[in-house]
Image (cartoon, rainbow, N blue to C red):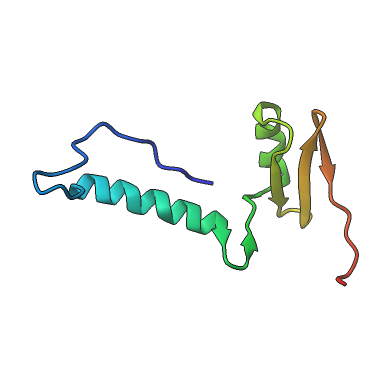
Length: 90
């Protein structure tokens, strides 16, 4: 999930409202959260198998990805990647 970095600018104008820069930051932040958290459920970051191998060592246990190369949900548990096995719903 992309979360915009906070920047040090004037946040509130003389009227007590957010400045344009602050509004822009808040809009980016809210959009980032909305992209990952929807009314229809959680969305996981999509990643290829090759890129997953590159970033996995730096990610903590409990991190979840949707691996697009093999269409798998992958979770890091006890330092190892585990795929979620699936059967047809329900």
